[in-house]
Amino acid sequence: MLSLNEEQRRIIDLCNTKGDAWSSINPEYAARMKLQNQFQTGLDIARYTAGIMRQDMDAYDKDPSNYTQSLGCWHGFIGQQKMISIKKHFDTTDGRYLYLSGWMVAALRSEFGPLPDQSMHEKTSVAALIEELYTFLRQADARELGGLFRELDKAHIANDDVHAKEVQNKINNFQTHVVPIIADIDAGFGNEEATYLLAKKMIEAGACCIQIENQVSDEKQCGHQDGKVTVPHDDFLAKIRAVRYAFLELGVDDGVIVARTDSLGAGLTKQIAVSQKEGDLGDRYNSFLDGEVIENMANLNHGEVSVRTNGRMIKPKRLASGLFQFKSGTGEDRVVLDCITSLQNGADLLWIETEKPHIGQIASMVNRIRAVVPNAKLVYNNSPSFNWTLSFRQQVFDQWMDEGRDLRQYTRDQLMSADYDETELAKEADTRIRTFQQDGARDAGIFHHLITLPTYHTAALSTDNLAKGYFGDDGMLAYVAGVQRTELRQAIACVKHQNMAGSDIGDDHKEYFSGDAALKAAGFDNTMNQFG
View 1 (cartoon, one colour):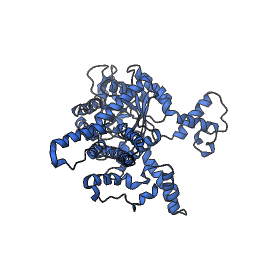
View 2 (view 1 turned 180 degrees about the horizontal axis):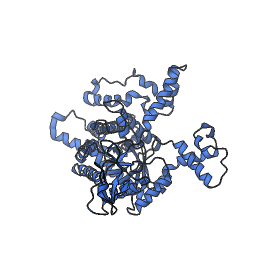
View 3 (view 1 turned 30 degrees about the vertical axis):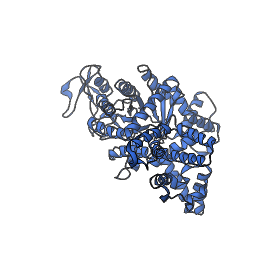
View 4 (view 1 turned 120 degrees about the vertical axis):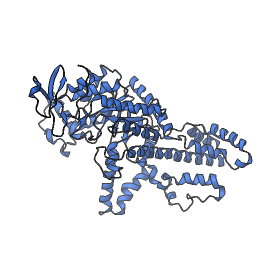
């Protein structure tokens, strides 16, 4: 963080070199403005936040209770409000990041309108959202510091040196709202050159951490839908290298790469891997192909292909789409190979996309990976695509059944029912949900927990509740009781929406620029004054 006093002294010296032409410049005002905008470029942000992530990763390696968290955001205002809320409730942003979900960009930010998570949205919309998020976070800094500066001025006018010293201490120890963003580049949006070009745009916008997945670019699917198709390791590693080169070119030497594998739920591949010799990476990829052993090449029909793997010639099972199928039950083995290979070739963190939130399942794969790469650690998607309530109730049910407990009051397939909400089983399930993140950090190598789409769902839920009341019998009371009164009592910053939009910052600047002639918005007739 810049020092206000040091910056003020620097500007005083600068103004003295300019003579009378700069005599109307107030060095303290200029220093304040500099402090309110300490990150001049996205690369400044990327370098700063990369350092934070590296420190957090080291802290986790020493003690897994030091795991980190984030929530997915699809608009700068949502990201800003999340960080303002974190500072309000916890006094620090340490260990809290933002996540930029490609799913939400596709669903909410594409010029085509709402799209499925299939990389059909504009490439640049991802980088644009990163820039937007940091624009709002930088404004959150300016807004909070502006309030401290005005408070400091009042203390000086009142000759209250004690309060002035307290405010000055807050300014000197100010913690920025700017935090790392883990940004989703999907499967790279094309070949490795396309991945490199987009990665550069994302890093220039401020991304210190880029997450890339091993699906094909042109047929990428949401991680929680069917029809996923993976690529051979050499193809994926080329894109990991492309991202690393982008970081290095732009001087973000500590940039973080998250290698995501979708192999657990992907049963298809688009191509047979290139293999030079038995046991190489291509051969190991091909060994998972489903097919029949060929003893005589003359038995191949027209258009059929064969591949030598594991010392045998096989005819891979090829679908009408031209895709090749993996053997059933090989998902976990492919995940482990993907993860080890990625970490050995430049990735920093792993992402294993699973079909359910089960710590035992995750830990079983991570333990195998750590047998080769001991400090392997995960970014894990606490996905809204999981039915958390049903999944954990069934996990408890299954464990209790194995323990021989009496479960006659429960029906496993109906455990989602509200009829079970107050039962012992439901309460135990909720306890496990509550501790899932700390348990996963300790037992399954999860460094970072995120929810990909939370603000998509909260926006829908809150809008539904407001619309139901406002257009129903409650009328305006639905807004007043359900929104504004709650905002006031919880001290939600945006209840003063003019202030959140920058009105007070603008008033400060007008006073800096025009002095007593400034026409300011925060006078007596500003209705925001009703909120104290």
